[in-house]
Length: 149
Image (cartoon, helix red, strand yellow):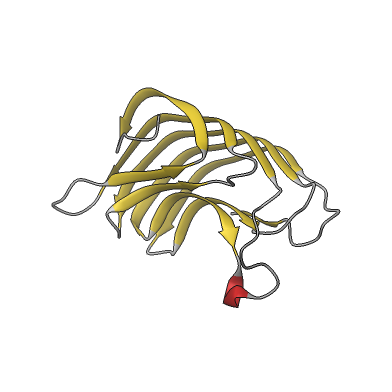
């Protein structure tokens, strides 16, 4: 997980990080970027999640820019963290929820340069789905579930 970013107004960013060859089994989150729903000048740039197996994971792929635990100090605010150039490559396995890809980006600073490359996530006997808001990017290779770009 990359985060929690943006809790403090003057926070540094995260740049050029690669997470490679991981297995997630029965976890709440798989590959995640999480930011607080607060104004800040933090950033995420150049993150790659590569070769990850998901086994019954609640949120296999997730960007959450609306993190606000217990609705304290951040309700009705938007994240100021700028997220760009995040790549998901060869992410595969099973989701514990039908929504296997959640890209829930900031309305004020949409995520950009998001790339899904050879992603294959399933959900039991039903098709998995993707849910995306305020995210711009592209698919390459085979991407299941499709629906964001």
